[in-house]
Image (cartoon, rainbow, N blue to C red; front, side):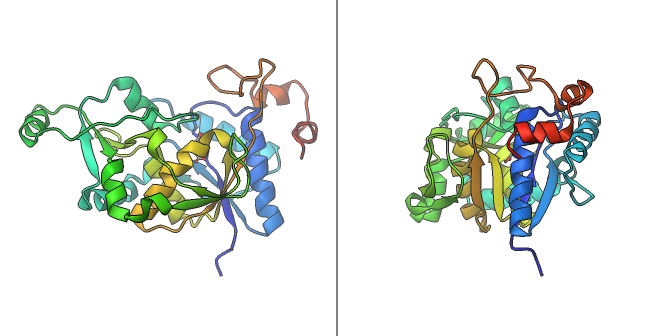
Length: 283
Ligand code: GLU
């Protein structure tokens, strides 16, 4: 019998975990325990330029220190490019994608990691076939984008798609949320070089792993609109969402790797016990 409740913690091994990650993992873990369900760990390592095996090892060390357990082997996204390609082919066969040759390096980079915040609302258009052919012959790099216009036409009732929010969005949104992917624009689903981008990988994995509840920070609430749309286009079941609040640093900004938030490792080395940290985080 497959468990009725499967949730996951899906870090990108691009740095060491900090309190915010611990809070997120503990939320997911507790939800699974309370429901008598499963907790899955997944490595979102498609950003090959920044992902490191050493970070994967330290993430596991940190989670074990917190007392969390997960099944091995852990799914590593970089090992499943074929799964993403199959989903991409399915969308392409429905004429929902177009090549974007104008993708700037930084936009392309952002697309492989989760957009923790508002989308870039890019809206482009397919090139004239002759021009496209020329660019392909020149072997120019490109990204595949999902055309929101085509997607809307394809599912017809796009305006009526909903997702269930059992936690809360950044503005306290709860319950049945009407899907509006427009603020994120025509998102990148794959890059020619990597073959996949964040939204597609998450949606495919959540479906393949039978995730029933996505527990994560509310900075990914906007991303959920795009992901629900992709689930509908790919014929996948829709998990329920439990977005949780974000932990803020002393400067009232959310904790982040980029701003060098204190790592769990450093906290541990200061002599703080896992019990103390969990108590501080409300667990
Ligand atoms: N890998 C993403 C991150 O590091 C999380 C993806 C998700 O929970 O959907 O933020």
